[in-house]
Length: 95
Image (cartoon, rainbow, N blue to C red):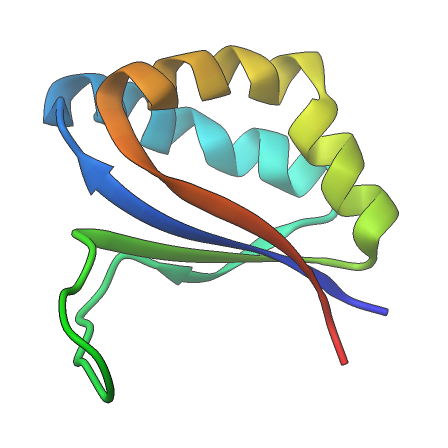
């Protein structure tokens, strides 16, 4: 069953975030993941407020998602992302 990471991100240091953004695709691909949404225009359907950046990643299953997130390569990038942005990440099982 597919699994997803959904992220609401507000970038606070664009130049540092660019380092994170350019290095993620190789680590993501190595764990069978792919981008479904990476930034892009957002329109509010309900509620108020829109985070600066929305990201949705897809993995074959939760095991691949967890392997990606826990990998030393991605954890190095997490440290960069956390210095360059604020936000929330969710791991979601597909239907």
